[in-house]
Image 1 (cartoon, chains in turn red, green):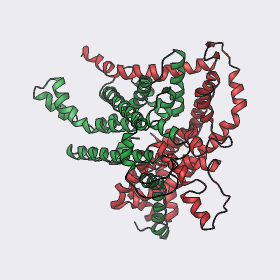
Image 2 (tube, chains in turn orange, red):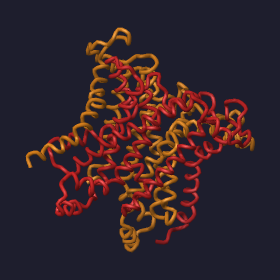
Image 3 (cartoon, each protein chain N blue to C red):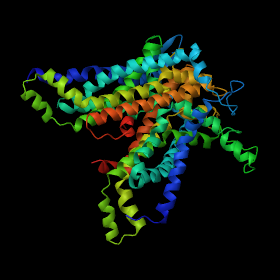
Image 4 (cartoon, rainbow over the protein chains, first blue to last red):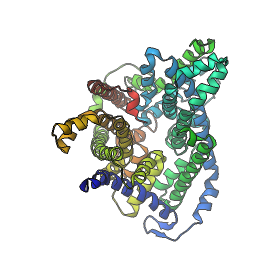
Length: 283
Length: 273
């Protein structure tokens, strides 16, 4: 067996090396960059400038809170839309089950940016939705939706809805139907059987779906850029990070903001999983 | 199970509304790919034409980014699928020191916001004076694809019947022959699913690419750049064609899955989450 001991390391080697060099090391490097001072032309020197952290949090704290709020709203709305949808597919889908699942993942087969751009067109002041409503006299002609906070949350909701529905569906599909029947046999009202059996058993899906929605949503900048039209009143922290990295070349501040985003997201996720007792649920 | 009035009426109606919601921008994309706009705005319906499907191929400003994206997606898929399959085999088949470290290293990139992956790579490119372009985009795509490939492959390997391999060994096949003749054909549907997922993620990536691209334009970067004012019909033409390509991909995967006699989860397995 002597030589075979090396087999797993040979198999893992290239992948682990790739992830270390192009993921782990850049992450560590970003921490160093955030504590450095300098300019793009002159280069950046590590000066252990920890003052950058209170500085960027002071300056962009409101944007962090706004991004968290948008992502929380997105998670909540996708859950409210996604749960009945996943429930229908899992319990009432019948022969349409696979068709419905295909429709749920359909947005994935259209480029992220193309579907977001098309929403911008549909939701524009005289577009398919609001133009029609204005022509019918239902809406005030001055009404507009793009570039508002609600429009950014709308875009996030559309783009991350499948990430909520799929884990919910997987969790609901796994539930043993006899448990729900048993609740009925024991004279549980339909609502209480749903709440105390079905919903409780689907909690792992709720947790997974919330995380898969919240994490990408909180760092997103495309929806705020395209549907939000880059309006300063509705941009997210991702827009600032992107701008600082690619336009103003303010690398230390951008790196510090990115780090706060990562740490903050991890903390929120840890609090959330602890609060719902996800450790127990995943066992 | 007899549902009440709520689930008899409200659920189907609600489901139909969600289906419309999911469908709407896609229907608009397909519809406006056939529009015949006067200017480049393409905001209102002017008339039906298939002209866009012909002119799109004679525009080097469009075909250039598209070919580049296809090249990056193809190469990154081949490399990430090879590396990822090897990792999946190692993680399912062997017990060794450092396994949990490897698992964490594979898991974290999938949970970090994309902007973080892109931005941290940019910091490294700039600091080490690496010229950004085709090579750096390719490296970043392989990086984010590896984890998804490993997860997909691992899910397939867990339910694998090892007695078939033992049968191969009993019939005097050596280790490599057993892998080639028994293991590989059996896990091939998993590898194919992983490759399709990697290809789809790569060709569609905007965020990570943006940070590693420099002045190079991939297809998604070109789309956003050219659509500042309105969406040129050509963008919707290509979006529609990519959708068609995806359906062909699902078709192949379903067919492969049926051929190998395994129960396939349909489109969900392609998404892999």
